[in-house]
Amino acid sequence: MSQEQPKNPLHGITLKAIVEDLVARRGWPDLGAIINIRCFTHDPTVKSSLKFLRKTPWAREKVERLYLSDHQKIQKNAKRNRRRAAMRAKRATTEATSDEA
Image (cartoon, rainbow, N blue to C red; front, side, top):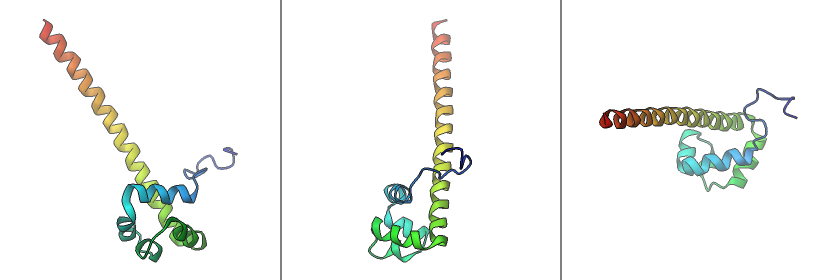
């Protein structure tokens, strides 16, 4: 199955998982401010949002783009944080070694 869509970053991720992740990270008010559609701004629920997004390709595309954008930022920040932690650890060992001498 992974052979069919090897370059699709959303392959295997359901629309429900996308909406739930965005709501958990951003909340309904922020989501409605970023993507101004009624299902996010007036009495929002995951169920009503899924119903609308499945029927409306342009809205679904906006939600998917936001999700991908968020995850790219998360990955970039994680990579930067790992690099910074490695630099701190290296600095700490260098300082400990120079203190012993």
